[in-house]
Length: 251
Length: 352
Image (cartoon, rainbow over all chains, first blue to last red; front, side, top):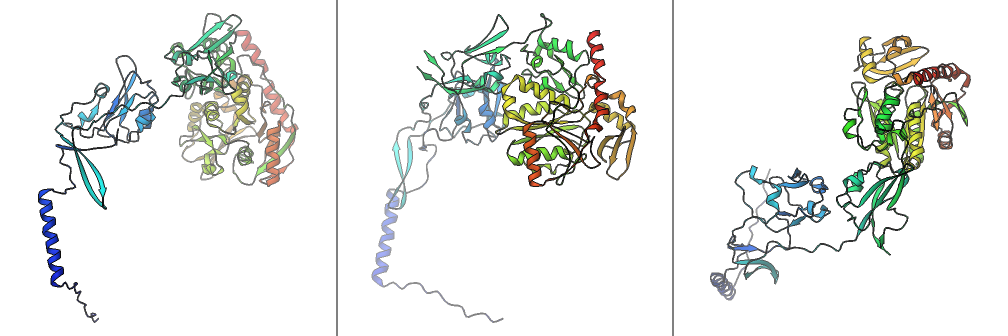
């Protein structure tokens, strides 16, 4: 087989004027970079990149708001959240950061607003076992040694990426006000199918559901709409699935 | 003052509490004294389906290990138990149509009409879930929720099981999931349980759309029948079908071999609750199906209620099955045999 004749690629031919022009431009860029370097690198830990608020970081927990509904552990796609019994006999979440993928589905699913997001991304552990974080360590922000004096933001100027450095410390946690709550109360959608087991009354933490046996063999069930917080525990526990959360309408 | 309004729900309601014959005991202890300890219990598992405390443990025999601590004393079991206030039913009952049928699509015990009825109801859109009993590799029953006819590729779904299945606990689950309705198939005691649930609770009245009953003389606990069959040399890995016809119990193996013995031999292991059951044809069902009364390869179908009539008309219109003549008088012998068990109920009631 005969090879085809090879073709030599010829570069553009500059005249002397063009050559001087390009060389002077190159020297100019080099001098500019030596005085004011145009790097795309963040000098961590002396600088810290500014992230959006609550961006996929360490998870904080407020036990007062937790209703132990287990939603966070059910929804966790990485099985990182486990519910552990606390000394007060309630179940609270624990996070294994060896498994956590920081999707924050748990925070989205939290019905009481007990889980909160931070933008702390640099927590160090000595070994894999230490990455298991019990509930007590989730209540307050972890201890952080701050060395950063500047924070960095990216901005695009003239189709080129520039770094904007600002002096000062970036905040790592901001309390986002919870969305306006629609008041909900538990109601019974099919009273005829109630078997009268009183599980809803036993499970209610706020004492909103009362069950009293009257003379003549009837059981009177009552949901106190002023006490009910709409947490939904009774809805979850009802074996006949006849309780439902409804919007509270005031007269 | 704040109140929750609208048709969506109520915040105050009343529940009628059933009477307790034994005043100082829980409802479950009442049930135990009146039904379970007197061998009236048919193992229909209606109580297990409704119990909010989950005190029933279903195994070979139904057991209640923690009833003293777990019972919530709500009275639901007493309200739904078909034998707490036992009104024995017998005979053939009223019917709209009495026909023999053979499905063209499915293979089952005889004419596979139970499968055909439930699958046609699924295709009509009358129900979105049919409850079928299947078998595992050890020949024990397990329940399947059938939502698509294609699911019937599981070959163990067709055919009579001659073993108790946990139909009603599965019904409770299905009723929670269903959008259109549930179809169910069961022995006369299970049918009575469903009717009792429907009588007491609207949620079952609205959502259980089709109840198919089976002709039933007696039933066996899984542990007893498996032990018995093993003693007769039946290998469960090869067993494909069991039959009771003309006084004989026939087990058919995959290599064509048949093990036969007389029905009198199994009488010892018949479940105790069957001794007081007088209902052969599942009088309370929408349609009952069995082999007696029609030719070989056909199933007798007794259409009693309007929903079942609609399904049968659908099958006729789509020509999913062949239909033939059935003879009601052929059922008389077994109806009378079961009616004769009425005397057992009275003697039991007298002794307790």
